[in-house]
Image 1 (cartoon, one colour):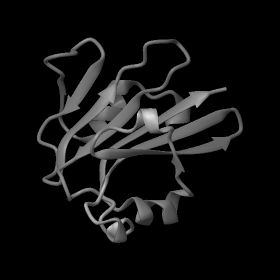
Image 2: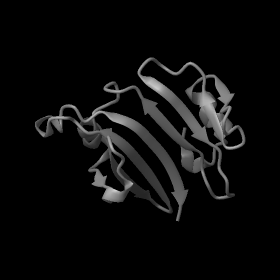
Image 3: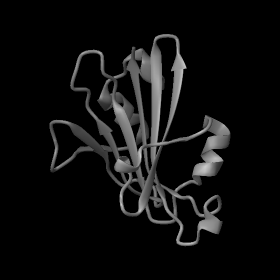
Image 4: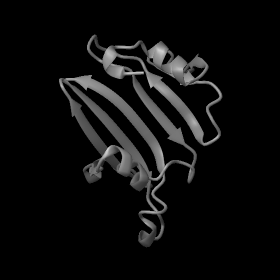
Length: 135
């Protein structure tokens, strides 16, 4: 499904599985009921403005997400976000792809290994957000 073709959030969510409203944010977020075992949660944010597209966020279980290094081989190089964007246990990385008038924003919260020597083998993605916007 191409996000640049303005699918509804409901259509995006339905492509991922059975949809339920988020009990805490039913007006703005749809959840995928019964996500696959490696996920804690999958959510689709409803657009708040006319030109906005749905945003999909995958939340992986600790140590079960894909490797950020492996993803970069498929998606392109990560840019490290400013230190203020990082949390106590997650590094924040982002990839931007521009195609015509659209930009795809792929943001990740990546687990920080206890041993820095394992940075490229234990760099599990915990949060992966994908959004598209028109410039």
